[in-house]
Amino acid sequence: MAINSTSLLTSYQRHYLSTNRPVYYNPHPDLLSSIPDHLLALAAPVIAYWALSLVFHVFDVSDWRWLDKYRIHESAEVKTRNLVTRWQVIRAVIFQHIVQTVVGLWWVEEKLAGDQVDHVAVMSNMLPGLHSLVRVVVGEPTAARMLEKHAHEILYAVYWWAIPTAKFFLGMLIIDTWQYFLHRAMHTNIYLYKKFHSVHHRLYVPYAFGALYNHPLEGFLLDTVGAGIAEFVAGMTTREATLLFVVSTFKTVDDHCGYNLPLDPLQMFSGNNADYHDIHHQVIGIKSNFSQPFFIHWDVILGTRMTRKDIELRRQKGKQRSE
Image (cartoon, rainbow, N blue to C red; front, top):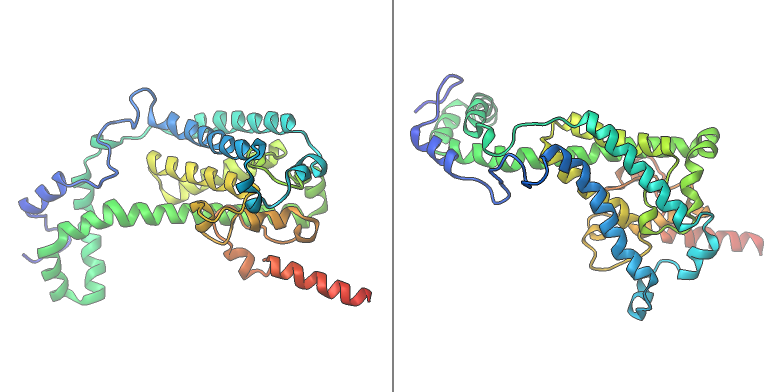
């Protein structure tokens, strides 16, 4: 069967695509029967924020000695060096979550999901583009033979795995880019820093539920708008956006948790972790490590990365000059 832009899948291939679903697939219109997906997309990151924050708060108030070697700062530092109380932080974060939710009610749309979507039709419509791409890579005869035998398998892999993964990573890169340049601007412009971003840096020693302690306008621009742009540009479904929002929230909380935990998957994810961001909250690193929440490529590319080794070298040079 020679596949061109007008050809159809065979009955076997259509049957394969209609009966095979990935392990993550949920056929229902909503993931949870008690709440529509578009509302779950708003509730899930809020729940994730406070749930993970509570875990780290338990660590903070516990007397578990095994945690001492993983603390970036002593518990006493949180009380003596921070310029804002925990209750002030909690109130500010709750306000940001309210703003985030209200904006989300306007922004997030109800979309078809699960078996409401004709997935086979969507995959069939992808076939001409797939044929053109394969033809460019391997040539027409090979492309025709390959798609005759494996079109259904390739479409399945692309539709259910490659495209969602690509959209997720694109969403992460968009959030990283948005937050890096806005965050950096907040530090390089004196007015923006004093008026807005200095609020967040009242937490000299970060802790988990202070991750979103910001001036309300900064919180709206940095987090709410950035996430909305990522969802829109990446062309995400509601469920894909929900996953991105939750992972981004987990990562943001973890980056402010105050612990350098060796088996924490969110800290193993990339070099952008709690210790990396803690440097930014110190006086010596306040003009460095602007990247958040996922990767550090912008810091590396634009020369704003600072490591613990860099700090030590800088202190040694300062000591040598003073001598």
